[in-house]
Image (cartoon, rainbow, N blue to C red):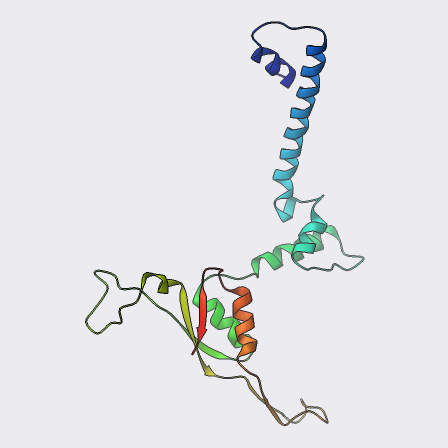
Length: 180
């Protein structure tokens, strides 16, 4: 059944003349909308995209090689999406380790019946979205023979602000990260 037939059945009586032309125009608009919806359902996934391939690359800040095949471009998009991260503490501990920090992350818990014990801190309900990050081994680098070049410092230290920036860029929006 066509959209023109469906629209004709919605009318209480048979109309002719300009109404038939108007129904045809409206039916054409509905068919175009359906085609756009089907296209969008394919384009919303990177492995089936064709039209929005460059949009996926732009959003993920990917600059493909000029001779890159479509399959390579799609593989890069899927890789980037899979490597965006997770929301668990271990992911953030691993991220800190890759940039030279050893950290522990503690998620605070509010006072809850059945969980609280004598001596536990009484914390408000909102603390469940607060992480305390303790840097157990900071970013200290020392020059090594064969790895350092002339003119480089023998030792250098990076402030925790570098790690703070990384965590704040990747953390869930509702989470507050406090470095202790």
